[in-house]
Amino acid sequence: QRWAEEKAKETPESAAVLEAAEALRTSDIPVGFPTETVYGLGADATRSGSVQGIYKAKKRPSDNPLIVHVDSIEMVNRLLNPNGSLNTKIPAIYEPLISRFWPGALTILLPNPKDSLLAKEVTANLPTFGVRMPWSAFARLLIHVADRPLAAPSANASTKPSPTTAQHVYHDLQGRIDLILDGGPCGVGVESTVVDGLSDPPAILRPGGIGIEEIKACPGWENVQVGYHDSALQSKEAPRAPGMKYRHYSPKARVVLFEAGSDLGLVAGRVKQELLSKQSGEGLSARRIGIVRTKTWPLAIQLASDAETSSQTQETSTHNDDTLSIRQITTSIEDIPTMIYDISLGSSAESIARGLFAALRSLDAENVDAIYIEGIRDDEGDLSAAVMNRLRKAAEVFIAV
Ligand code: TXA
Ligand code: MG
Image (cartoon, rainbow, N blue to C red):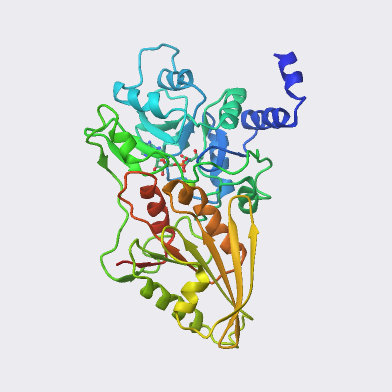
Protein backbone atom coordinates (compact mmCIF):
# COMPACT_ATOMS: atom_id res chain seq x y z
CA GLN A 1 0.00 0.00 0.00
CA ARG A 2 2.71 2.47 0.97
CA TRP A 3 4.72 1.58 -2.07
CA ALA A 4 1.67 2.05 -4.26
CA GLU A 5 1.03 5.44 -2.71
CA GLU A 6 4.62 6.54 -3.19
CA LYS A 7 4.52 5.31 -6.76
CA ALA A 8 1.24 7.07 -7.40
CA LYS A 9 2.71 10.42 -6.38
CA GLU A 10 5.03 10.25 -9.35
CA THR A 11 2.52 11.70 -11.80
CA PRO A 12 0.82 15.00 -11.06
CA GLU A 13 -2.60 13.52 -11.85
CA SER A 14 -2.31 10.68 -9.41
CA ALA A 15 -0.81 12.91 -6.74
CA ALA A 16 -3.89 15.10 -7.19
CA VAL A 17 -6.23 12.13 -6.89
CA LEU A 18 -4.47 11.00 -3.70
CA GLU A 19 -4.74 14.47 -2.22
CA ALA A 20 -8.42 14.72 -3.14
CA ALA A 21 -9.14 11.25 -1.74
CA GLU A 22 -7.41 12.18 1.51
CA ALA A 23 -9.44 15.37 1.75
CA LEU A 24 -12.66 13.42 1.17
CA ARG A 25 -11.80 11.03 3.99
CA THR A 26 -10.70 13.59 6.53
CA SER A 27 -12.06 17.05 5.82
CA ASP A 28 -15.55 18.52 5.69
CA ILE A 29 -14.77 20.71 2.71
CA PRO A 30 -16.09 19.08 -0.47
CA VAL A 31 -13.99 18.42 -3.58
CA GLY A 32 -14.82 19.39 -7.17
CA PHE A 33 -14.36 16.48 -9.57
CA PRO A 34 -15.19 15.65 -13.19
CA THR A 35 -17.82 13.18 -14.31
CA GLU A 36 -19.01 12.55 -17.85
CA THR A 37 -22.27 14.42 -17.18
CA VAL A 38 -21.32 17.56 -15.22
CA TYR A 39 -18.72 18.38 -12.58
CA GLY A 40 -19.69 17.11 -9.14
CA LEU A 41 -19.10 18.56 -5.69
CA GLY A 42 -18.18 15.44 -3.78
CA ALA A 43 -18.26 14.52 -0.11
CA ASP A 44 -17.94 11.30 1.85
CA ALA A 45 -21.55 10.07 1.79
CA THR A 46 -21.09 8.23 5.09
CA ARG A 47 -20.26 11.33 7.19
CA SER A 48 -22.85 13.96 8.06
CA GLY A 49 -20.29 16.73 8.55
CA SER A 50 -18.85 16.06 5.15
CA VAL A 51 -22.23 16.08 3.40
CA GLN A 52 -23.25 19.26 5.21
CA GLY A 53 -20.11 20.81 3.73
CA ILE A 54 -21.67 20.47 0.26
CA TYR A 55 -24.63 22.61 1.24
CA LYS A 56 -22.41 25.19 2.86
CA ALA A 57 -20.25 25.50 -0.25
CA LYS A 58 -23.24 25.70 -2.60
CA LYS A 59 -25.21 28.01 -0.28
CA ARG A 60 -28.20 25.82 -0.77
CA PRO A 61 -30.74 24.51 1.77
CA SER A 62 -30.39 20.80 2.43
CA ASP A 63 -33.85 19.71 1.34
CA ASN A 64 -32.97 17.70 -1.77
CA PRO A 65 -31.71 14.13 -1.77
CA LEU A 66 -28.21 13.74 -3.22
CA ILE A 67 -26.96 11.12 -5.66
CA VAL A 68 -24.43 8.65 -4.29
CA HIS A 69 -21.55 7.84 -6.63
CA VAL A 70 -19.89 4.42 -6.52
CA ASP A 71 -16.95 2.78 -8.29
CA SER A 72 -18.32 -0.76 -8.33
CA ILE A 73 -21.30 -3.06 -7.83
CA GLU A 74 -19.52 -4.25 -4.70
CA MET A 75 -19.85 -0.79 -3.22
CA VAL A 76 -23.59 -0.82 -4.01
CA ASN A 77 -23.91 -4.17 -2.27
CA ARG A 78 -22.13 -2.80 0.79
CA LEU A 79 -24.64 0.04 0.91
CA LEU A 80 -27.56 -2.38 0.61
CA ASN A 81 -26.08 -4.67 3.29
CA PRO A 82 -24.42 -2.57 5.99
CA ASN A 83 -24.09 -5.67 8.20
CA GLY A 84 -21.75 -7.28 5.71
CA SER A 85 -24.15 -9.96 4.50
CA LEU A 86 -25.25 -10.24 0.89
CA ASN A 87 -28.88 -10.85 1.73
CA THR A 88 -30.27 -7.78 0.02
CA LYS A 89 -29.72 -7.81 -3.70
CA ILE A 90 -30.14 -5.07 -6.28
CA PRO A 91 -33.75 -5.49 -7.49
CA ALA A 92 -33.84 -7.57 -10.69
CA ILE A 93 -35.63 -4.85 -12.65
CA TYR A 94 -32.40 -2.85 -12.69
CA GLU A 95 -30.27 -5.63 -14.17
CA PRO A 96 -30.79 -4.76 -17.84
CA LEU A 97 -30.22 -1.07 -17.12
CA ILE A 98 -27.06 -1.68 -15.12
CA SER A 99 -25.60 -3.98 -17.73
CA ARG A 100 -26.29 -1.50 -20.51
CA PHE A 101 -25.75 1.89 -18.93
CA TRP A 102 -23.29 1.46 -16.07
CA PRO A 103 -20.87 2.94 -15.78
CA GLY A 104 -22.74 5.92 -17.21
CA ALA A 105 -25.31 8.69 -16.94
CA LEU A 106 -28.00 6.72 -15.15
CA THR A 107 -29.09 7.01 -11.51
CA ILE A 108 -31.26 4.32 -9.95
CA LEU A 109 -33.25 4.39 -6.71
CA LEU A 110 -32.62 1.65 -4.16
CA PRO A 111 -34.16 0.99 -0.74
CA ASN A 112 -32.14 2.57 2.02
CA PRO A 113 -31.60 -0.01 4.79
CA LYS A 114 -32.51 0.82 8.41
CA ASP A 115 -28.94 0.71 9.61
CA SER A 116 -27.74 2.61 6.52
CA LEU A 117 -24.12 3.63 6.17
CA LEU A 118 -25.26 6.82 4.45
CA ALA A 119 -25.44 10.08 6.34
CA LYS A 120 -29.07 11.14 6.78
CA GLU A 121 -28.38 14.38 4.87
CA VAL A 122 -27.88 12.31 1.70
CA THR A 123 -31.39 10.91 1.49
CA ALA A 124 -33.36 13.86 2.90
CA ASN A 125 -35.32 11.36 5.02
CA LEU A 126 -36.60 9.37 2.05
CA PRO A 127 -36.75 5.56 2.36
CA THR A 128 -34.63 5.29 -0.79
CA PHE A 129 -31.27 6.50 -2.07
CA GLY A 130 -30.19 7.38 -5.60
CA VAL A 131 -26.96 5.85 -6.84
CA ARG A 132 -24.87 5.86 -10.00
CA MET A 133 -21.55 4.57 -11.24
CA PRO A 134 -20.02 7.35 -13.35
CA TRP A 135 -18.43 6.52 -16.69
CA SER A 136 -15.57 8.95 -16.07
CA ALA A 137 -12.53 6.85 -15.12
CA PHE A 138 -11.19 9.85 -13.22
CA ALA A 139 -14.32 9.90 -11.03
CA ARG A 140 -14.21 6.16 -10.42
CA LEU A 141 -10.52 6.28 -9.56
CA LEU A 142 -11.21 9.01 -7.02
CA ILE A 143 -14.01 6.99 -5.41
CA HIS A 144 -11.82 3.90 -5.43
CA VAL A 145 -8.84 5.57 -3.80
CA ALA A 146 -11.01 7.39 -1.24
CA ASP A 147 -12.73 4.04 -0.67
CA ARG A 148 -15.95 5.89 0.11
CA PRO A 149 -19.23 6.38 -1.73
CA LEU A 150 -19.40 10.04 -2.73
CA ALA A 151 -22.50 12.17 -2.40
CA ALA A 152 -22.27 14.71 -5.19
CA PRO A 153 -24.61 17.28 -6.65
CA SER A 154 -23.46 19.44 -9.52
CA ALA A 155 -20.59 21.73 -8.49
CA ASN A 156 -22.26 25.06 -9.29
CA ALA A 157 -23.42 27.79 -6.96
CA SER A 158 -27.10 27.25 -6.23
CA THR A 159 -29.39 28.35 -9.15
CA LYS A 160 -26.50 28.75 -11.66
CA PRO A 161 -26.06 26.59 -14.76
CA SER A 162 -24.35 23.29 -14.00
CA PRO A 163 -20.58 23.28 -14.54
CA THR A 164 -19.10 21.35 -17.43
CA THR A 165 -15.49 22.46 -16.99
CA ALA A 166 -13.20 22.84 -13.98
CA GLN A 167 -13.10 26.59 -14.74
CA HIS A 168 -16.87 26.78 -14.25
CA VAL A 169 -16.48 25.19 -10.81
CA TYR A 170 -13.67 27.59 -9.94
CA HIS A 171 -15.76 30.55 -11.07
CA ASP A 172 -18.65 29.63 -8.77
CA LEU A 173 -16.91 28.13 -5.75
CA GLN A 174 -13.49 29.77 -5.47
CA GLY A 175 -12.74 30.57 -1.86
CA ARG A 176 -15.32 28.05 -0.67
CA ILE A 177 -13.55 24.84 -1.64
CA ASP A 178 -9.88 23.90 -1.65
CA LEU A 179 -9.54 21.50 -4.51
CA ILE A 180 -10.90 20.83 -7.99
CA LEU A 181 -9.74 17.90 -10.08
CA ASP A 182 -9.61 19.05 -13.70
CA GLY A 183 -10.54 16.30 -16.12
CA GLY A 184 -11.31 18.59 -19.06
CA PRO A 185 -14.77 19.37 -20.45
CA CYS A 186 -17.62 16.92 -19.76
CA GLY A 187 -18.66 14.75 -22.70
CA VAL A 188 -22.40 14.53 -21.97
CA GLY A 189 -23.09 18.00 -20.58
CA VAL A 190 -26.39 17.35 -18.76
CA GLU A 191 -26.95 15.44 -15.52
CA SER A 192 -27.80 11.75 -15.29
CA THR A 193 -31.24 10.32 -15.97
CA VAL A 194 -32.89 9.35 -12.67
CA VAL A 195 -35.12 6.26 -12.77
CA ASP A 196 -37.32 4.62 -10.15
CA GLY A 197 -37.68 0.87 -10.67
CA LEU A 198 -39.19 0.39 -7.20
CA SER A 199 -42.52 1.78 -8.33
CA ASP A 200 -44.90 -0.11 -10.61
CA PRO A 201 -44.80 0.83 -13.42
CA PRO A 202 -41.24 2.16 -13.23
CA ALA A 203 -40.75 5.87 -13.77
CA ILE A 204 -38.27 8.40 -15.04
CA LEU A 205 -37.89 11.07 -12.37
CA ARG A 206 -35.44 13.30 -14.20
CA PRO A 207 -34.58 13.30 -17.90
CA GLY A 208 -30.83 13.23 -18.47
CA GLY A 209 -27.90 11.73 -20.30
CA ILE A 210 -29.66 8.46 -21.18
CA GLY A 211 -32.69 8.93 -23.44
CA ILE A 212 -36.11 7.42 -22.74
CA GLU A 213 -36.04 5.33 -25.94
CA GLU A 214 -32.87 3.59 -24.74
CA ILE A 215 -34.53 2.86 -21.42
CA LYS A 216 -37.74 1.61 -23.03
CA ALA A 217 -35.67 -0.86 -25.03
CA CYS A 218 -34.79 -2.71 -21.80
CA PRO A 219 -36.90 -5.67 -20.59
CA GLY A 220 -39.32 -4.57 -17.86
CA TRP A 221 -39.01 -0.90 -18.85
CA GLU A 222 -41.22 -0.85 -21.95
CA ASN A 223 -43.98 1.00 -20.08
CA VAL A 224 -41.81 3.38 -18.13
CA GLN A 225 -43.80 6.43 -16.99
CA VAL A 226 -42.64 9.98 -17.26
CA GLY A 227 -42.66 11.06 -13.63
CA TYR A 228 -41.50 14.65 -14.09
CA HIS A 229 -43.20 17.46 -15.85
CA ASP A 230 -41.92 20.62 -17.33
CA SER A 231 -44.28 22.98 -18.94
CA ALA A 232 -44.37 23.15 -22.68
CA LEU A 233 -46.54 26.21 -22.63
CA GLN A 234 -49.87 26.64 -24.30
CA SER A 235 -50.00 30.38 -24.60
CA LYS A 236 -48.13 32.27 -27.26
CA GLU A 237 -45.93 34.06 -24.85
CA ALA A 238 -45.70 33.47 -21.14
CA PRO A 239 -43.43 35.33 -18.79
CA ARG A 240 -42.74 33.34 -15.67
CA ALA A 241 -44.65 34.90 -12.81
CA PRO A 242 -42.01 36.53 -10.65
CA GLY A 243 -41.28 34.58 -7.52
CA MET A 244 -43.70 31.85 -8.50
CA LYS A 245 -41.09 29.22 -9.06
CA TYR A 246 -37.47 29.86 -8.55
CA ARG A 247 -35.29 29.62 -11.58
CA HIS A 248 -32.66 26.99 -11.93
CA TYR A 249 -29.71 26.60 -14.25
CA SER A 250 -29.98 30.37 -14.73
CA PRO A 251 -27.41 32.86 -15.88
CA LYS A 252 -27.70 36.51 -14.78
CA ALA A 253 -29.14 37.46 -18.14
CA ARG A 254 -32.83 37.17 -18.97
CA VAL A 255 -33.33 33.95 -20.91
CA VAL A 256 -35.93 34.01 -23.66
CA LEU A 257 -36.68 30.50 -24.87
CA PHE A 258 -38.42 29.89 -28.15
CA GLU A 259 -40.03 26.47 -28.33
CA ALA A 260 -39.12 24.41 -31.38
CA GLY A 261 -40.87 25.47 -34.56
CA SER A 262 -41.30 29.13 -33.60
CA ASP A 263 -41.70 31.26 -36.69
CA LEU A 264 -38.47 32.98 -37.71
CA GLY A 265 -40.32 36.23 -38.36
CA LEU A 266 -41.54 36.15 -34.78
CA VAL A 267 -38.02 35.50 -33.52
CA ALA A 268 -36.58 38.33 -35.59
CA GLY A 269 -39.35 40.63 -34.35
CA ARG A 270 -38.48 39.86 -30.76
CA VAL A 271 -34.78 40.38 -31.36
CA LYS A 272 -35.58 43.75 -32.93
CA GLN A 273 -37.77 44.72 -29.99
CA GLU A 274 -34.95 43.78 -27.65
CA LEU A 275 -32.36 45.74 -29.59
CA LEU A 276 -34.49 48.84 -29.84
CA SER A 277 -35.79 48.74 -26.28
CA LYS A 278 -32.65 50.16 -24.79
CA GLN A 279 -32.24 53.82 -25.64
CA SER A 280 -28.94 55.61 -25.48
CA GLY A 281 -28.37 57.46 -22.28
CA GLU A 282 -29.74 54.62 -20.19
CA GLY A 283 -26.35 54.21 -18.65
CA LEU A 284 -24.88 51.27 -20.48
CA SER A 285 -22.61 52.23 -23.30
CA ALA A 286 -23.69 49.37 -25.51
CA ARG A 287 -26.49 46.93 -26.00
CA ARG A 288 -25.41 43.37 -25.60
CA ILE A 289 -27.45 40.33 -26.45
CA GLY A 290 -26.68 36.66 -26.91
CA ILE A 291 -28.22 34.26 -29.38
CA VAL A 292 -27.96 30.51 -28.97
CA ARG A 293 -28.87 28.64 -32.13
CA THR A 294 -29.53 24.93 -32.54
CA LYS A 295 -31.15 23.33 -35.56
CA THR A 296 -32.54 25.96 -37.88
CA TRP A 297 -31.91 29.58 -36.91
CA PRO A 298 -29.63 31.51 -39.25
CA LEU A 299 -26.61 33.45 -38.03
CA ALA A 300 -27.47 36.01 -35.39
CA ILE A 301 -26.62 38.92 -37.64
CA GLN A 302 -29.11 37.64 -40.18
CA LEU A 303 -31.78 37.51 -37.51
CA ALA A 304 -30.93 41.05 -36.51
CA SER A 305 -31.02 42.37 -40.06
CA ASP A 306 -34.20 40.45 -40.80
CA ALA A 307 -35.51 42.54 -37.98
CA GLU A 308 -35.09 45.50 -40.34
CA THR A 309 -32.97 47.49 -38.01
CA SER A 310 -30.64 49.87 -39.71
CA SER A 311 -27.75 47.78 -38.60
CA GLN A 312 -24.33 48.02 -40.05
CA THR A 313 -21.94 45.29 -39.22
CA GLN A 314 -18.58 46.68 -38.41
CA GLU A 315 -16.65 43.71 -37.28
CA THR A 316 -17.00 40.06 -36.60
CA SER A 317 -14.59 38.08 -34.52
CA THR A 318 -14.63 34.62 -33.10
CA HIS A 319 -13.13 33.29 -29.93
CA ASN A 320 -13.10 29.81 -28.58
CA ASP A 321 -13.39 28.70 -25.05
CA ASP A 322 -12.91 25.14 -23.91
CA THR A 323 -16.08 23.83 -25.42
CA LEU A 324 -17.49 26.35 -27.83
CA SER A 325 -16.85 29.08 -30.26
CA ILE A 326 -18.51 32.44 -29.86
CA ARG A 327 -18.92 34.81 -32.76
CA GLN A 328 -18.95 38.41 -31.67
CA ILE A 329 -20.67 40.88 -33.97
CA THR A 330 -20.01 44.53 -33.28
CA THR A 331 -22.49 46.81 -34.91
CA SER A 332 -24.41 49.98 -34.41
CA ILE A 333 -28.15 50.24 -34.43
CA GLU A 334 -29.72 53.68 -34.52
CA ASP A 335 -26.35 55.02 -33.42
CA ILE A 336 -26.15 52.88 -30.34
CA PRO A 337 -23.20 50.50 -30.29
CA THR A 338 -24.49 46.97 -30.20
CA MET A 339 -22.81 43.68 -29.53
CA ILE A 340 -24.42 40.46 -30.60
CA TYR A 341 -22.84 37.24 -29.40
CA ASP A 342 -23.71 34.25 -31.53
CA ILE A 343 -23.29 30.64 -30.46
CA SER A 344 -24.27 27.63 -32.51
CA LEU A 345 -24.58 24.42 -30.53
CA GLY A 346 -24.88 22.26 -33.63
CA SER A 347 -27.95 20.28 -34.55
CA SER A 348 -27.65 16.94 -32.78
CA ALA A 349 -29.16 16.54 -29.32
CA GLU A 350 -25.76 15.30 -28.13
CA SER A 351 -23.85 18.37 -29.22
CA ILE A 352 -26.57 20.70 -27.93
CA ALA A 353 -26.50 18.99 -24.52
CA ARG A 354 -22.71 19.12 -24.41
CA GLY A 355 -22.52 22.87 -25.06
CA LEU A 356 -25.67 24.14 -23.38
CA PHE A 357 -24.46 25.13 -19.92
CA ALA A 358 -21.14 26.44 -21.22
CA ALA A 359 -23.06 28.65 -23.67
CA LEU A 360 -25.16 30.21 -20.91
CA ARG A 361 -22.06 30.79 -18.80
CA SER A 362 -20.01 32.27 -21.66
CA LEU A 363 -22.77 34.73 -22.48
CA ASP A 364 -22.99 35.74 -18.84
CA ALA A 365 -19.27 36.45 -18.93
CA GLU A 366 -19.96 38.85 -21.83
CA ASN A 367 -22.51 40.67 -19.66
CA VAL A 368 -25.37 40.33 -22.11
CA ASP A 369 -28.77 41.64 -21.04
CA ALA A 370 -30.71 38.86 -22.68
CA ILE A 371 -30.15 35.48 -24.27
CA TYR A 372 -32.42 34.28 -27.05
CA ILE A 373 -32.42 30.51 -27.40
CA GLU A 374 -33.74 28.22 -30.10
CA GLY A 375 -35.45 25.25 -28.44
CA ILE A 376 -35.69 21.80 -29.92
CA ARG A 377 -38.46 19.19 -29.94
CA ASP A 378 -38.38 17.25 -26.70
CA ASP A 379 -40.14 14.11 -27.85
CA GLU A 380 -37.44 12.40 -29.86
CA GLY A 381 -36.63 9.92 -27.09
CA ASP A 382 -33.03 11.08 -26.80
CA LEU A 383 -31.17 13.80 -24.91
CA SER A 384 -33.57 16.40 -26.28
CA ALA A 385 -35.90 15.88 -23.27
CA ALA A 386 -33.05 16.71 -20.88
CA VAL A 387 -32.02 19.74 -22.94
CA MET A 388 -35.53 21.21 -22.96
CA ASN A 389 -36.12 20.37 -19.30
CA ARG A 390 -33.05 22.39 -18.31
CA LEU A 391 -33.83 25.24 -20.70
CA ARG A 392 -37.41 25.58 -19.48
CA LYS A 393 -36.08 25.83 -15.94
CA ALA A 394 -33.56 28.48 -16.94
CA ALA A 395 -35.98 30.58 -19.00
CA GLU A 396 -37.70 33.70 -17.81
CA VAL A 397 -39.83 34.05 -20.90
CA PHE A 398 -41.21 31.26 -23.07
CA ILE A 399 -42.36 31.77 -26.56
CA ALA A 400 -44.37 28.89 -27.92
CA VAL A 401 -45.69 28.35 -31.41
O1 TXA B 1 -25.16 13.65 -13.45
C1 TXA B 1 -25.47 13.72 -12.26
O2 TXA B 1 -26.33 13.00 -11.74
C2 TXA B 1 -24.70 14.73 -11.39
C3 TXA B 1 -23.21 14.36 -11.42
C4 TXA B 1 -22.40 15.21 -10.49
O3 TXA B 1 -23.06 13.00 -11.16
N1 TXA B 1 -25.21 14.71 -10.06
C5 TXA B 1 -26.40 15.24 -9.73
O4 TXA B 1 -26.68 15.04 -8.41
O5 TXA B 1 -27.13 15.80 -10.50
P1 TXA B 1 -27.82 15.72 -7.59
O6 TXA B 1 -27.54 15.31 -6.19
O7 TXA B 1 -27.90 17.19 -7.87
O8 TXA B 1 -29.11 15.03 -8.08
C6 TXA B 1 -30.16 15.00 -7.17
C7 TXA B 1 -31.41 14.63 -7.84
C8 TXA B 1 -32.58 15.05 -7.01
O9 TXA B 1 -33.02 16.34 -7.30
C9 TXA B 1 -33.59 14.01 -7.38
O10 TXA B 1 -34.12 14.39 -8.64
C10 TXA B 1 -32.80 12.77 -7.60
O11 TXA B 1 -31.51 13.18 -7.92
N2 TXA B 1 -32.75 11.90 -6.42
C11 TXA B 1 -31.67 11.58 -5.67
N3 TXA B 1 -32.02 10.74 -4.68
C12 TXA B 1 -33.34 10.52 -4.80
C13 TXA B 1 -34.31 9.75 -4.08
N4 TXA B 1 -33.98 9.03 -3.02
N5 TXA B 1 -35.59 9.76 -4.50
C14 TXA B 1 -35.94 10.51 -5.58
N6 TXA B 1 -35.08 11.23 -6.30
C15 TXA B 1 -33.81 11.26 -5.91
MG1 MG C 1 -27.66 20.47 -9.85
